[in-house]
Length: 243
Image (cartoon, rainbow, N blue to C red; front, side, top):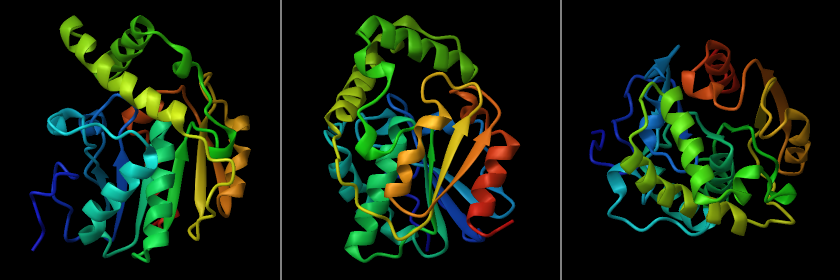
């Protein structure tokens, strides 16, 4: 029977799905950031992941390293690794997606069919990005922009609260230094965006050190992924061999 109380998954996985993509939230955000995404795409279950210290798990301490998060996430998601699956992460969460893929591989659990990393340099090329140098006021402006992108007018008190969550995630990113990354057994698909000025697609070549890598360049800016564009969903489906 599917466990509907898994704290990592706000909704139960579909028993009929032919594959699963676990969607790791962007820094400072929770699983609800994927609310514009469909539940299924051509039989592939699209499953937002809830992280400790975020949204419905605010009563838990935030993670201090992506490696610690990976150990917890691998254990929490193990019951749902029973069919072809992948991880998707964008910007900072791409590093979390990489680390949980590595942790699962090292632990001898069923390995991912693929890792999708969007708008992020490889582990050995970071820390990288202007977010890492922002003060709290600037981080609040970024959260307000993302809130509007998701269709909600930002509420100042909530923005102030979530700046603390985002600050913790940014500090985790700044601590992440991996000069010799673990090479994954599963293939990696890097996803760049034509108008992304935060992480240009031509800075993502270092992922080839982390596994067999292919690249996709999609149309849009840094936050385009939150709209679940059809071309992105097709990339996720096809990479699982479900196209």
